[in-house]
Amino acid sequence: MNPTAPPPTASHLAPESPPLHPPSVYHNTRILSSLGTLAACFSGLISGILGLTNLTGFSLYLITSLITALTLASIKCAFDIERYVPEAHSFGTSSASTRSAKNGGEGKAMLRSWKGWIALSGIGQENLLGFLLFWIGSYALIHVYD
Image (spheres, rainbow, N blue to C red):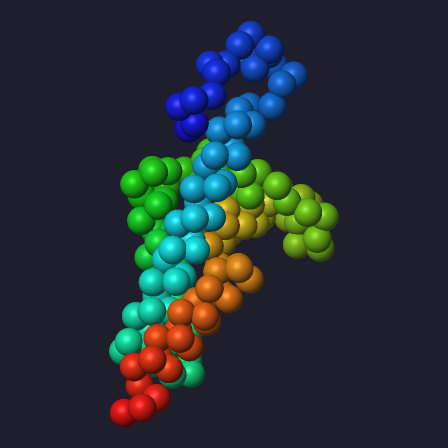
């Protein structure tokens, strides 16, 4: 939560207003993005230093992203992803979500939960490119001229 944001007023607590405080959501999204980027860059640096190539380097990236998501979920979210990650609240009109609506809504909760976990892990284009940059750079500096 953003400590500099003003406290919620009566309009924030009204039933027709959204349950999430927008400045806090923005602050939390920025922090999650920064943590995902840092984890990807450090895992790329470690992959390059260790001399990992091909799938072993990408597996380190995926393992690091998973560990980052589990750590954030346990320490900051108490494994209640839908409460703290905004991507867990949004879901599209894909065939999986319409199919799950017919099955009682259990599938919708599972789909939202997976979107929240993916957002929490930071697996995305910007983090992957940072991982590749640090992986290739550190590998080139250390192992090319061996």
